[in-house]
Image 1 (cartoon, one colour):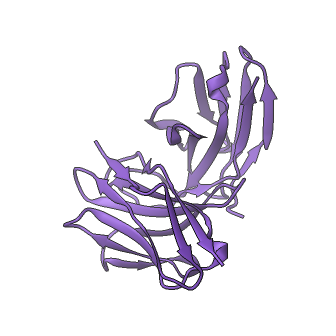
Image 2 (tube, rainbow over the protein chains, first blue to last red):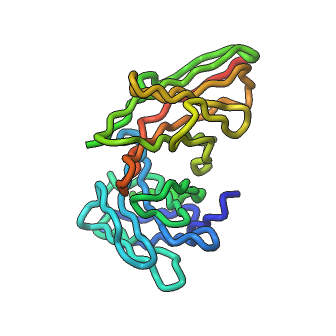
Image 3 (spheres, rainbow over the protein chains, first blue to last red):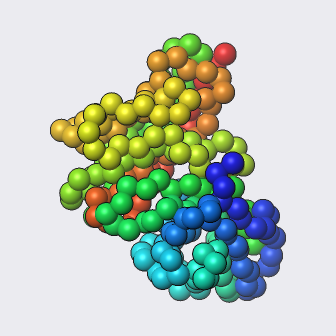
Length: 116
Length: 113
């Protein structure tokens, strides 16, 4: 158990809908990362937050957004869902996540999103 | 731009034999290198990392990796494979001072009894 929790574990929805995925980092970790894992694209970095502020952006679509709250949990919002958004979405956390640190990222169990 | 390549989609090895999972990387500056393992329906688990110092890094479950700067490689090794090592292995790189960690496509390791 990495100490990172994600809810829900599974999510089935229809095209055009909006969903919210939730992540609680390990106790004391300030950074949260979101990744998308699909069969054809592999593991893609979406976005990173550090202590409530966006720190780095990867291949995140404009239909997707995220935020990190004062209690450090994070939410990833996916809107206008398409079939191609079906994937595993992972959250990871690290102690700091600044450019100069060497912290390891610890991954949650993931949320499997199925868009029908 | 940084990148990481895992040239083999799948590695097959017999139980008890040594295993190697290959990884090469490209960064502008000094690399931070990581190996993760993913079991079915689970998140990624950290195995080991290279930041600086000794080129041979030892990690969890008997795995080790060797950093080779001239060949820009960071191959994962284990002297004696177990059936339970069968999983998906990811190499990742982050440039020192950078924020993004880039993951390879993954290599599926299959250990046959």
